[in-house]
Image 1 (cartoon, rainbow, N blue to C red):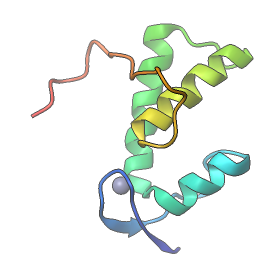
Image 2 (cartoon, protein in one colour):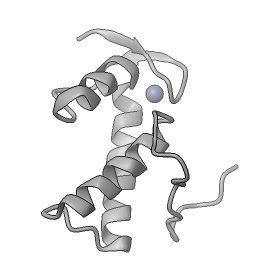
Image 3 (cartoon, helix red, strand yellow):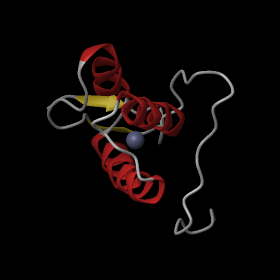
Image 4 (cartoon, helix red, strand yellow):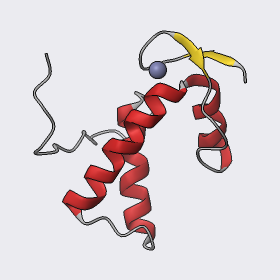
Length: 93
Ligand SMILES: [Zn+2]
């Protein structure tokens, strides 16, 4: 497995295992995000899905989650969109 310099944590670590997402965004994630941060996002996404009752069968739900993911990784997110707050997220140190 190749190493990537991650845009989120800034460290050079192993790339994401497997294919995280289809299309161009999947390619970008693979090139710019490490496996550690990807797992963090994975856990965060589950919390978002539960808390906001995101339905991934709906395009709207998928778009919502994709936007949150872009914000999480500081990728290009649609302007005006901000990260949702998850109640059980411990306060930042
Ligand atoms: Zn990282």
